[in-house]
Length: 434
Ligand code: SF4
Ligand code: SF4
Image (cartoon, rainbow, N blue to C red; front, side, top):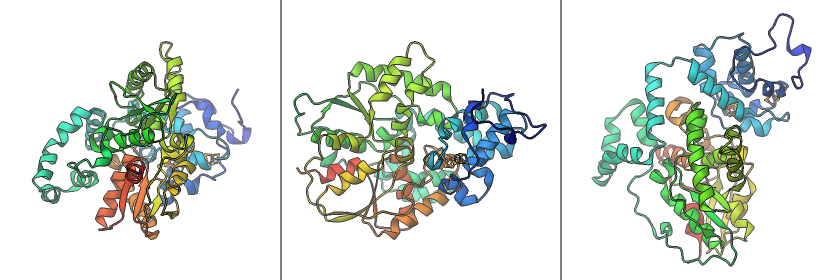
């Protein structure tokens, strides 16, 4: 039986059954077309086109599933332009599982749509390099050298088009690790403290490893026992968002095996997209008889840094007289529902003043590899975010996702702003009493 389906939704002569396996068809009927999600959707805010809204995309998926619409350039474009930010899920009163729908729709597009060569190449490059830290390090080695020789600016100027946009997004590659990034923590775990493992991710361990190490440091300061994973492979989020469910499952299995082996009571990631992906392992591997139970167990262990820290009481912070604004990373706010804990922890730092920015939970355009594949829309959203963050005049823009950090920092650099974009873990580590 189809839930919530009415005759009015299927005028005479229109198909009302799926002829193609695009998404879980039943889920489409949760949408009652109320439109309450429209103003929460970043792409709709920019284009004002119904087909770039969640409601429009749900309609599009249904038309594709029922064979009333061909998967042509237009249809693929509207689906590609979705950030997968899940802002619509938060706004939806009807419980539409949009995140799940768009992941399946993306897999359908990847299987059935012939992309243009340039688009195919970009996506392929992202897919074969980014999930593998060694490959990413090798690809970035010449740039690291250029940076050491203080020639990165020149290299950037010599580029144009997409390579230049990509270059501008990259954070500094030769940051000297400050004392706060030391793995040697001075904190003894409290007796009987739960063991926490930090999943170091793929891109994060290459471009923002301080965020992993400082997550461990802050957790240790809160009294947790830190346990290291022997191996860390990509969490699979990049593949989930780009329709490669097969490889996402392979990565998920490897992570499930290692997390279970580690004996960790909780698992934390410095990247909100990775947290959200790990939280979905139970669903992703539910039909895998060998891994289903362990995947559910791992998903249940997934925790967010600040909530976990607050459970044991905030550690001792030194006074930091500064102003901070907080950007909600999509997968943290909309995926995991974490909004209050990071703010509460920040406000517990003596002297700190938190100034809220409008639309703090609207996507900045980073969205995994979206800013690499859809640079025009991503840039518009980065500009919107930068304007709102800068209007607060805060000294720091704090966030809990490296992708958002690179995206917003790049936009602030373009504006020659002195505001500093910093990951929550790095900020908290900086504030710890020594
Ligand atoms: S996931 Fe984000 S971009 Fe996509 S439809 Fe929902 S709100 Fe819009
Ligand atoms: S808010 Fe939910 S039910 Fe309403 S149009 Fe959007 S997705 Fe459909």
